[in-house]
Every structure is written in structure tokens, then in C-alpha cells.
Amino acid sequence: MELEKSGSKTNRSLIRGIEILRCFKPGMGLLGNSEIAERTGLPPSTISRLTQTLVLSGFLQHDAGRQAYRLAPTVLCLGHAFKTGSAEIKLAEPLMRKASEKLKLNVGLAVADRLEMVYLESIRYTKNIALRTVAAGQRVPLERTSLGRAWIAKLDPDSRTQLLLELKKQKIKNWAQIEKEIHEAIESMSEKGYCVANWLPEISAISTSVQLLNGSYASLNLSTPAESKLNAVLENYTPALFELKDQIEFELNKIKLS
Image (cartoon, rainbow, N blue to C red; front, side):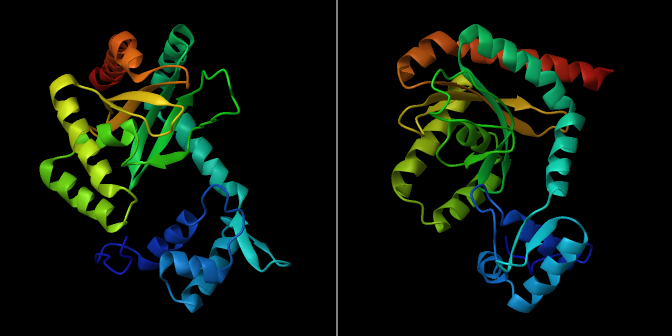
């Protein structure tokens, strides 16, 4: 994001403060001002002023010994408030859990945030729990996952072209092959209503889209453990994916009509 391209109705300091909070990813418990400046491209003096403000407002904690910052519990409270206040999650979660238990598969619902997909809800049914644990709020790559590719397919042509250009600028490894797979996923979504991906060697996933209450789209997926093959996913679970999609959209439409 280019921070300086803010309109007259936006607050630049607020935008910059949010960008600082965005720097904290899983595994980055502590960040110093210099590291935050490098990640945001903002001047160190600006970072120093804003991190102090974020500490005073309760969004960051300062580790004086290490001269660095970590997220404060307030951030967790915001995530909890979002999850408990989301009508989509309240309606989708029990349906996803039921499908997961019946099919013995992982079920996920995710939305896009810039160049990543963020899980709104994730129901894990992997026997080897240590293999991969995914929770609500976790991010996965937009370009490599069936979740991300299903979302890309729902974009209008101009937005999709712009997004692919932005992804290309990231100098992603094996981009030519990934871009080819994205276009194949777009075609699959158009013709069949779903797309597939093997983002991780031990996981096969199939995704479709779900329309949310505000008219935007989320991606819904079923994923299988290592011993399952992609062909089996398509043959056995595509109808179940569409059934779950229909169930979720049916419940959401009841809210729209009420």
C-alpha cells in the first residue's frame, strides 16, 4: 500500500498507525522502531512518534529491555469482538462443523485482505494435528491456495488484472507457473463453480465462493490430509462442497429477507 496516496477525507496518521499494527505477523513477537520503519517505508521519527501513541492507546506494549514493541491484548479483544459479532460466522460455523464431522475433512471460510486470504473460521479434522493447525485469523497466500484463486475468479476483469499485476511485482518464486494455475482456476470457477490447488505437499483442497451479506464474496474450502488424492477430492467431495455453500447462502438470505 502506498501510504501517501490518501484522499482528503482520510486521516494520514491513523492510516500510518494501522500500517504499524499490520507489521506484526505470527512469529514476530517483538519489533523495534527500525524494523517497523523498514517494513512500512516510513521515517524513523514518524515511527517513534506513532509507536508511543499506540502504547498510550493500549494497542502496543513496550519492552524497555529490548527496546521493541509487541501487540497488546486490546488487539485480541478486537478480533474476538469481530468474530462474535459476525452474522456470517455465527451461521456458517455450525454448518461447517457438521460437514467436517460427517466428511472427516477440514473446512475453511476465508476472505481477502490485500495479497493474502484471512480465515474467518476454520474447522480442522486432520488426524495428525501437529501437521498443520489453522485458526481463525490466520493468513495464507492469495496466489497459491484454492481459497485465494476462487476469490480472484470472482473479481471483475479490471480488478483482476490489477491484482495480478500487483502480485507479479512481488517477484514470487515460480510466478509464471503460478499465474498459469490462477488462470486455470478462473476457467474452472467459470465452467464448474470450483477450483482446486495443492498449496502444501500434504494437503489437497477444493474451493468455491460464498456471497456474504454485504454482497462481497468469501471462499469456502474442503481440504484433505496427505493420504488423500486430488482426484478423490473431486470425485467424492465436490457435491458436498456445493451443498455446504448452498446451506450457508440459504441461511444468509433468510437474514436479508427478514
